[in-house]
Length: 258
Image (cartoon, rainbow, N blue to C red; front, side, top):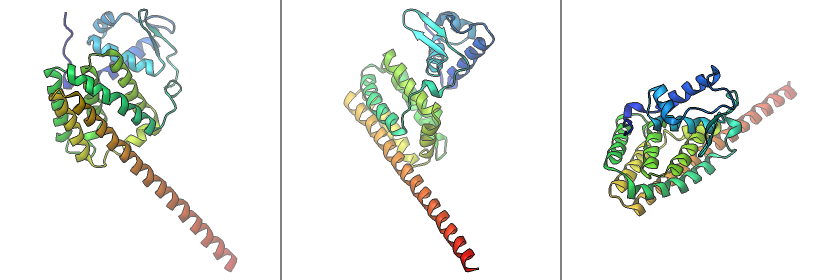
């Protein structure tokens, strides 16, 4: 039996499912050390698709709440564990470099396997980005996540899907990385939108080389924006320290003169 199709109204549904699973764990239905029901049973219990359950479980594993063991099942870990200790200590630049390498190849692979339905979904997401009429539109977390995960799923390679989803969790869950990405959302929104559009066009042409280059260009632009934002913050910090030193000097000089 085919699973129900996910629509734009299902955006981030796995977050809700993840919270439901956490509640079941905390309520004692599935104590630490126990094994969760299979995807099919859990999907029926929560009235969602198996794909959504899988995404929720991957998200919870990245947070250190679940342990997914291939061929064995999904096991419950400590529900009170914090997220940060289970995520790598990386910078926004390291994360973006990894995303560029992995997602560029994912785009190339997807160009050979993507369906017409997935292509239409990408076009719909790009239209949503354009219609948001916000300076942050082209990098809004939900739309941007949906765009990149649609491409990941279009590879038909679950290892690739899991890897890219984990990179997105790092982007969303490590505060300093989230802050870095948030700081560039308003920089050149038209450019970011055009980058997404170029990726979608390359995929519709089913051209692996063109899709790879379009995705790589997108991440090069993000890295350049991160560099500019970092330079701006550093300059502002230098100015702040200089002003503090100037005020301290003037105050001390005034005291000595009185």
